[in-house]
Image (tube, rainbow, N blue to C red; front, side, top):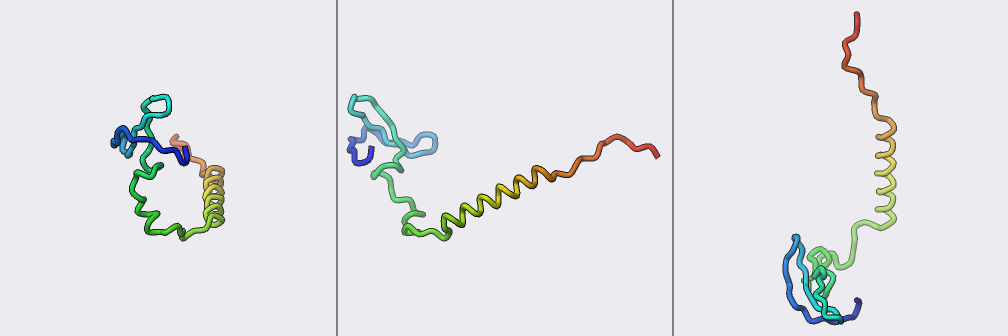
Length: 89
């Protein structure tokens, strides 16, 4: 759809998202998230960050691997629960 131009038939907020409605080449009414178009306002984060990020992709991938490793070790090293039955003394 890159580069295509459609006349907007309607613009609504549905399911918490800003959507545009348009007619495709066959005349069918279609909808699309407004953020995917040039109609939407610029995202404030994108505007403020100016394309920069405080984290590098490699750093984020290492963080994901670390979290997955911690989760895996927690699954395998869960302490066994003691039974609730009374012990005989």
